[in-house]
Structure formats: C-alpha cells, structure tokens
Amino acid sequence: MSNFIFIEHNIDVSKILQQVYDYPEDWSQVSTYANIGGEKAPSGFLPMVMGVVESENDNIKHSQLQKQTPLYNKYTEIVNWLKSYGIEDTSRAAFFKLPIGGGVGNHIDDGDYYLNRDRYHLSLQGEYIYNVDGEEHIIYPGTFFWFDNKKHHWSRNVSDKERITFVFDLVKSPTNPHNCINYAVHV
Image (cartoon, rainbow, N blue to C red; front, side):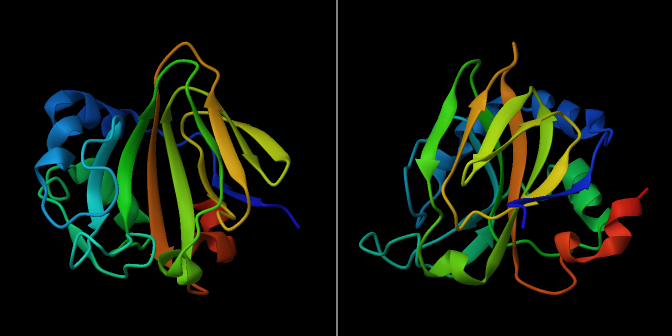
C-alpha cells in the first residue's frame, strides 16, 4: 500500500499564495502567542490553528488542546478552499516555508496528538521531494495529498523558489478526503 494518496493535482492556488504574500509580517506572529508548545520563534511557520499546552512543562506532542490564531479569519482564501472540500474544522494547521535547498530531516510524528489524526499537504509554491518510508515523489504546486506521517518521512526543496505549503491535520474519519472517492473528481 502506498504511503501517499494524491487527492487532487493542478489546483489553482494563486489566490491562496497571493494572500500569503500580501502579509509578510505574519510569519513572525507565532513569537507573540502565549501557551503554545514547541519552539517560540520558528522560522517559516505561519499558524492558523495551533496546539496549546496548559503549562510550559507539557509536551506539545501529547496535547489535544488547540486554538485558532487571529490569522485564521485573515486568510480567507485557504479557509474557503478547505470549505470547498467540506472541511469546516481542522486540528493544527499552518503555512510552512522552506528555503531554496532547505529540508526537513527524517522523523516520525509521534505522540498522543497524532494517534487519531490524518496529515495533509497542499503545495503552494516550489517543487520538493517528499519521502515517506522510502517511497519518494516530487511534489508540485497545486498538489493536495495525504501521507502516512506515522512512518519516517523527510522533504527537501529542489526548486529555485522557497517552498510554501499548507499543512493541516484532521481527526480520523471515514469522510476525510483521502478516504472518499468523490474527492478525486473535485472541481
């Protein structure tokens, strides 16, 4: 069985990407939020829905708590895109950037949070290699896919532009996009 399910290719992501470019200052917003887990000033992270912790000693990998950031209602294009798939609620969701030649090292998304969630990407800009448990694909802008993030995975930007993706999680359900044949013909 494949570690990837490609839900749709060649999506026009220009309006979503333009909205990201319209607000470059938003990439630094995460450093202003309280009660978040993980790194407090990560590079290339623009969160729409974030995991939160009750205390600084809590591990974000295990927290089921989350909240929409003030940016959620600002980025109407991605919210409308999600709604076009019948997605009204996501778990954690964010835009991510990788510099030219940059990569995300080999890892597994572990912890209680991930046990009952599916992970999706919508590629917005740049081409990147995505490898899950040895299965490798080049991802192009406009590609919407699910992958098994409970297996080792890594990525590398192989284009001459920053890679920008929208990454989001959904609570496991038979109605999630990678489980529904009707999404393959989404218009």
